[in-house]
Length: 473
Image (tube, rainbow, N blue to C red; front, side, top):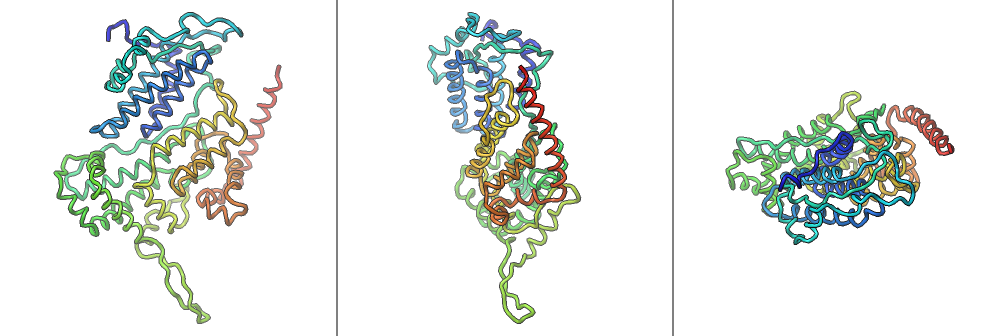
């Protein structure tokens, strides 16, 4: 690309805006969630009515590029995601560089500056080019980004070296899964690969807001301490059963030279072979199934025989290994529900879908309970309805933890909100405990009542301040 076509260097104000957007891109753990984040950022940057055609065309081009990259054969999924993050960052950089910043809003009805009327010269060339040329490009090359930068007037009055607080996205930090690992033998690689895939799900739920300090211990799935103990259970209890009881997994160990293959490449190999993929899933399910409670007849003191649920030795060992130290996390007594949850973490959780769902929850939280300067006000109950919808989109029991993540990541989503939300899941406490066991377990924990009183005082003060602000002329 000639030097004249390179994106302009960002000034301090533009760099501050890019710094606000980059963490959102880096937080994505899947391609579809990254696409949604990128489209949302473009929409935020190009939100004027006059820019609607440019915004739509840019988002469509980005979507096509993402879909082509996602469906390309032969590139590992992790590498695709890394490349697309570079792609998304470059797009956002160019969009920001080509925007026209002004010190105050334009008067109503004022004509837009000439620079705002269309796209760049590179953009006009892109419009005349075969659209498939964009999809055939390497996502790390700037040629694929030509013309995607449009312009927009933005009110930045009062900014001194950065964005105002009411323009910053909610600060949510993500926890990266462990890096790819290589092993010298198949059993070690197999164990590490199983833990790696489970860790991708566990790390999703460990995200946090550094500006939110709740007084309560987190539920188990939201903590790294629990995840480390779960990995230990998988390595020492579950994987040995899988290796001992599956002839197909033993056969898999002889089908390749596994030294030097890392945990990501392992799954690329397995996912292309339905026989071995099914064998791993079946062995995983069987190993966890051996830890389920068993019905056993017992003669009571009155001489009557009754059936009771008994924990097998393997479940007792799992319970002992997962028990938290004081204040680490909250965990109910591990039973069949927890075993079903752990089982689902290998194959049942669609990370792209759950990341997309989380992004939607964050957007609706801001629009309803913590609105930014550039956002429209969402209707009352929008976040509640979105959480309810999330329960239909994600595997059983994980919806509880999405609701709990809202509490730990969103400052204005308090215990009062969670308690009211539970009323949508049953008319009484027994029914709610059946349908949302982890949310109800958390709300019944020690210290919740006191924390709710403190949060209520904070909410009332915030609402009073907002009411006073709304009344000012």
